[in-house]
Image 1 (cartoon, rainbow, N blue to C red):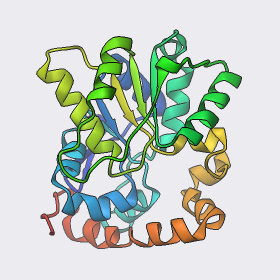
Image 2 (tube, helix red, strand yellow; image 1 turned 180 degrees about the vertical axis):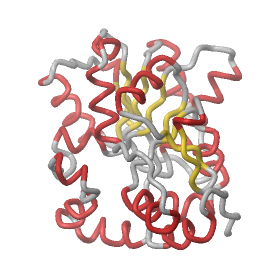
Image 3 (tube, rainbow, N blue to C red; image 1 turned 90 degrees about the vertical axis):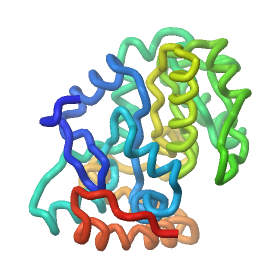
Image 4 (spheres, rainbow, N blue to C red; image 1 turned 45 degrees about the vertical axis):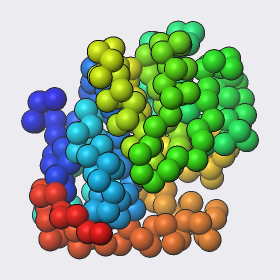
Length: 256
């Protein structure tokens, strides 16, 4: 990717262009696409070696975290384009390639969410058969692998794989999948780590208005919808301010 379209923050080269340029990049040059969250950058980046490797070596990293973009502007007086995982997913779904039968494979966190997501997809013109979706097991912290998923992808050969599972896990799974394709010398699909983004559309997550997403207020709507879950999560992202102020473009050291 041209350096003019990236901004390095905490050792990660974030995409810094328009949504149209992003979709073109993702669909024309498949690989691992990560959308690191604020808590992921504040915690997992320093504590999990595989997460750290995944976001650093991703083919495309998206600046989804409003907190990261805001702190970058405050401490370093520099701007970078923020494109949310939701906007990325919507852009992918509008691409003609995604509308081909079997072109997109979805990895869901639970059976309940799979049913809701597939219902929404069918209602919006993306009917999914059983072979187009998969419910992820509970992955271990270390030595993550999923041979069943790998075989499903070999059989279906999708052009896009959307990982709808939690942040911190999806990046590690996406990295493992990409490296598996490379080790087998097989063409890699676009592996998109959009987490809960589809849930905002299907009803699994609280609906976030477009204006709130653009003003970095998605976190507020999520906290109001489920304070016990999201307030502690976003509170854990506060160290991100220190990390950006202290390290800027540099990768922070590992902290065990």
